[in-house]
Image (cartoon, rainbow, N blue to C red):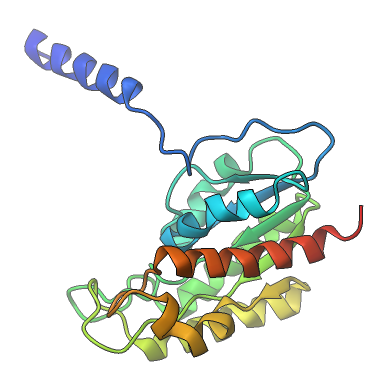
Length: 218
């Protein structure tokens, strides 16, 4: 490799190392004696992570994976790194919106049958941790030309596949789809799968309640 290329690589690594971590992805300084909670999911979960931490302050140490979780296939690939060696008391998780995203050929990024297989693999690995598991259903896709392309009816199909796995595995359900659907005009951005700040706060209250239920009385 030429000297100039080496210098560019070193400079890039230095700049990356100096880039501050977004607060939502930064590990939380944990309070001893509190249960440990892990949030896994895509940008929808990124939106509710900080308010969930605030809601559960003094009740649980709420960590999240240090990235947008992406597809279920990415989850299978990354799961050991995300789980690490530490003990988790509750894991709240979701995959779906990236899987059902329509690609340039009009097909989903992850076909439904493959999605179900990946979810099954992921749940098997999570169950080995001994944590209480909570599956969050995928939130609605609104009508209209969302970008990137997604179809509202795909959400029901992918949720149904995931729920089959959860029922077989005895995993608790946090039905964010049912929570969000009747109030989409109030909490979701127009022609967008993402939520307003107030919408993310509303989802956070639902998520925090499901985590409290899993933690039980202290």
